[in-house]
Amino acid sequence: MSKYFGINPQPATRQAVEKFEDEVMIRKDNRILTSTVYLDMLDGRWAVAVAYNPSRHPGLHGHDNLLEVRYTYSLKEKTNMTMMRSDPLEEIPIAAGPFGDPDNFVRYALDHERDVINHQA
Image (cartoon, rainbow, N blue to C red; front, side):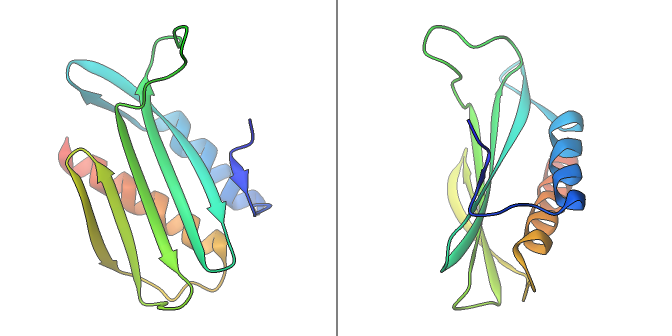
């Protein structure tokens, strides 16, 4: 299954995604969760989603995402990015941008998520 939709990331962006997935793990409800990053670039908006799953092998029904985070950037507004977290379920506007291209947005969103995770620890 492809993790990149509507984008062929630059090598630096691919490296940032791989580094994030290799390095970022969180603890939630006494479970270690590993991260998987998905990129979805459409004509009107760009999105970076991070799914945090248990580190064990998936069961019969696949992974159960215990935490999902999505960063979206509207190409109309170009001044705000929105962060949605599934626990607690809330959307938070973040002053960011404008971004010149999707790759810059992806790297910024991953850096922001890393900062959020590091401050929760």
